Amino acid sequence: MKSYFPLIIGMTLVTYLPRLIPLALLNNRNINKSLKEFLLYIPYTSLSILIIRGILTAADGMKIVTVIGVGIAAIISYIKGNLVLSVLAGIILSFLAINTLFKSSSIFQYF
Image (cartoon, rainbow, N blue to C red; front, side, top):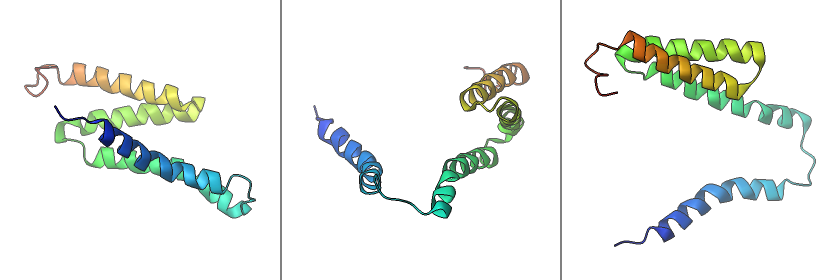
């Protein structure tokens, strides 16, 4: 049987080091205010890119469910400002929409 331990250690280092090195190097340095403001937008940009990609690449029968889930997540996020609550609400509403809208569809007969 192969040992996957070296592979797991290697993947851990490759994932962790690019995050650790900038943190260690820029820990005590003053960063330009405009650069700091720009870096604050990166998580929101990345999340929005992933959401839009998910909507555009959804299967034909799942586009409505995807838009419903993203819509409720956006509304709750706007009202409450809580990321975890909005994502959970989007997941739950998408799950309920799949189970109610596509209950008789042959694609979802195994779920």
